[in-house]
Length: 165
Image 1: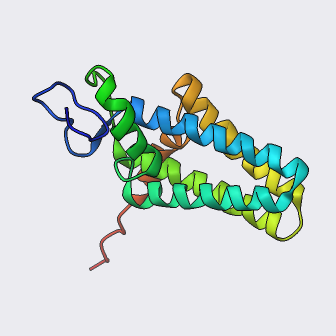
Image 2: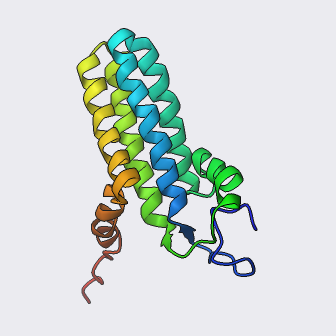
């Protein structure tokens, strides 16, 4: 079996631009755990919380820039989980997942700024927003960024009107 995010069968890899839905959900579980640690750390040490949220921001940035196949948690899934589970039966497109990672990055950066500038409340609130989104995806398969993506994609496709003659 390939070490990609998953396969549709032993001989038929997942099409380019698609990933096994279990990979992003695995990544969401790991993200959920990291963000819970951020919130716990914030109680005892905002500096530790800032370090953790900074690390998670880097993970979000990699996911937003390069997609789920290059995402650090996606790589963990591909290496350790995918070879031990049945072939993928369901896939999803990559662009909405990259957009969801971008939204996570925004929440993480605002959270980091909150911690760095001494506003633990802002840090905790935005880490909480990211946690809520990650947990929704992990536990229920609801990707908030993926739900918002079609609206954003529609705005990006607007082309300027032709110049009048």
